[in-house]
Length: 230
Image (cartoon, rainbow, N blue to C red):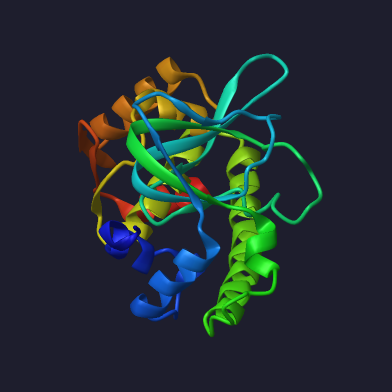
């Protein structure tokens, strides 16, 4: 059943180090529920019943939270192979901690926590590796959330933009890269007003610090951006 998503599952950190053939046997044992979603459809809604750790098999989605004032903040983007819900899976909470909305038609499977840490009826040798992977993922996610807090503590808009662009360049391994968000989503992620973001990006382009066309961005003056990020 999961053979069609072999490539996506091979890059999923939950299954790192598990042989592909063994993984197919393990998934048949775990039998996760697969669901499909249309563009803009909600995969989860904050506060609704938690279904289990999710794995994106196809498509793209964003993780969002809404403040008491009704302002949306984007916490992360999800691509094929990415997980969500791992931070709450073993917390004892019964509801989703955030809302997830599909940006491109998607397929997702849900794996209840008890299937991850429970005894495997077939004694799959990769099951212990699965548990080890989950512990590492939760630790890394905690570090990512700490980085998100650092974004929110930067006082200036230009500083927020500089840090964000430098991080995207680092992930891409190049000064030219594609943004994971559109302009509205980037504003939500940085927790700033969209018009202010657009104006500041325009000023940075006019000053020769960056260049951009659509979602493609090129950092021209890396050192200047590093100075703004301090």
